[in-house]
Amino acid sequence: MCREIKVMFKVKDSPIHGKGCFAVNSIAKGQTFTFPVIILDKKTIPLELKQFMFPWLPNQSSLVLSEITFCNASSNPNFKILSIDKILNTKTFICLNDIEQD
Image (cartoon, rainbow, N blue to C red; front, side):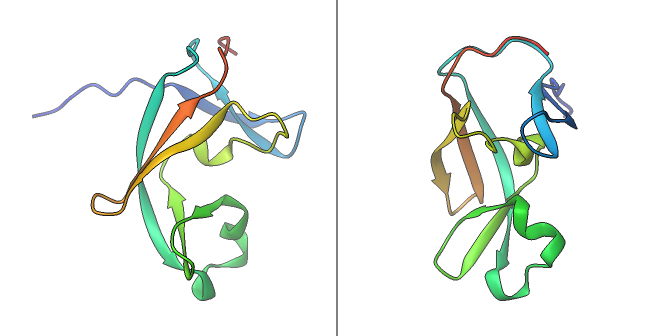
C-alpha cells in the first residue's frame, strides 16, 4: 500500500545561517511532525554531519531524516522536540509559532 506524502518543508539559503528549513505551506502553532532518525555513536560521526545532529543518549546522537534537520539555527526557534521514541527511532517536533508559507 502506498500513501501520499505531503511536502511541508524546503531547504534554501537562510538569512540567519547557511541553509535553512522553510515552510512550503502555512503551518499552525501546535502542529506536530514525526520523523525517523538514524542513531550514530558520537565518536564516529563525520565532521560534515556534526552540525545536523540532535541529542539522543549520552554517547549517541541522531540524524533526523527530513528537511527539518536544517531548522532552529535561530535564537527564537519555530520548532522544538516534543517527544522521542527510542523503540521506533523517531522524533516528534511541535511548531511553536504560526508559520506563513515561504
